[in-house]
Length: 305
Ligand code: AMP
Ligand code: ZN
Image (cartoon, rainbow, N blue to C red):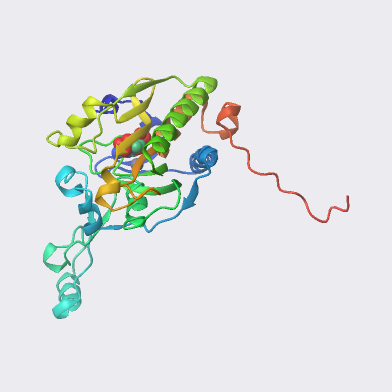
């Protein structure tokens, strides 16, 4: 089990608006700015490997996630989307029968079967995008997306139903992926040390793999996941080595024609935000210099100088 389960920073005092039943967090003002600045910082770390930034649609097809055994491994996490069914005058039936009600839910009889999923990690979209492709070179991609995980308990800034994840992903030959993960292990360790942010680097098992899943047994033999834990309690970043799993399932070939290896570095933006607010307060200018990514200076035009 991931040690983040025991996390508790009592972040309720930080965030004024949190729906703890649904796990929905609202940020405001300097909190939004700090999260944006942290994401810019992670983007600057992605430049270390020359990662190309992508923006994917926020949903993935059931078909695509099923290729990765998503529904047998994590049915508990899944958030599916559906629409009001327009077949057989479905819209009219729905509108007529609910006209005089204040709705809190929509009966499943009015809904289409779910064909799209709000994914629980940002990197699935990368493998989906590269499916059935042969790569000319090893690839580095970065992406940030809203992620959805149905959890049993929610906690503001630490464990939400919906949160944001920035990922840096490497797809290609085994050695490249291993080097990539080592690079980020070192880089993040160094930066957190210099920032004096209290942390631990721990081996972890992935909540991504069900306990009955043979992949978990494999993971025990060779650590496939490391987590950076803030104050020994809260996983803020994970390093994940998937071996050929996604290369096989999505039919992605590396430049030699073999199934591609993949690895990812995942940053939970709201958890970083909570850790930074706890340590340094809400104003990003109080962050240690090593955690500040300065905006490029805007040159004033027409000043006559
Ligand atoms: P994982 O894929 O489980 O390693 O998650 C990647 C990162 O996402 C973690 O290190 C956390 O920072 C963040 N994260 C995971 N689950 C949640 C959640 N329910 N709420 C907020 N952040 C999360
Ligand atoms: Zn990932």
